[in-house]
Length: 171
Image 1: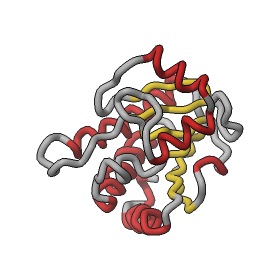
Image 2: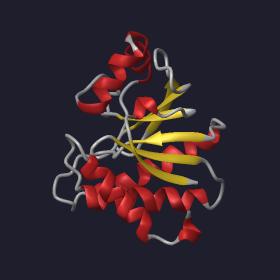
Image 3: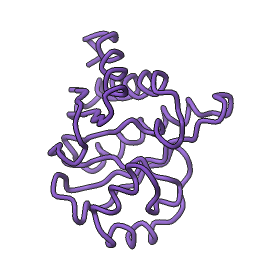
């Protein structure tokens, strides 16, 4: 099952939320910084022990101070440079890896923001198509309730419009 909702990711009760992480996994700007702040210093300390990742990688940690989930999936989405340096493939890979780690950890519900569309400047329309298509493909093998949770109305509208365009059979 796949839903697109206009809400705050911290208001969605799920097994895990996805942190649009930087490759250091440390507190950054945007939503990543907010997640680290709300989860507390334990999250920062845990991420220091995990170490640097690559674009497309995901890791899972406890949620520490967050009350709406048990886990945080840290997803290293790509920076948009010019679209000719593997950004599309990396964004698709990160969404595939989110689902793999969710399956591996027995999760039944996850909340995903619009990865890479903030300070990493990935075009929202392309990101929505890549993300929803990648998740829908994974849903065919083993369903997990996936919520794309978008706080910004413009991003919500783009993701919702793309979800409505794709085949109902994929979802």
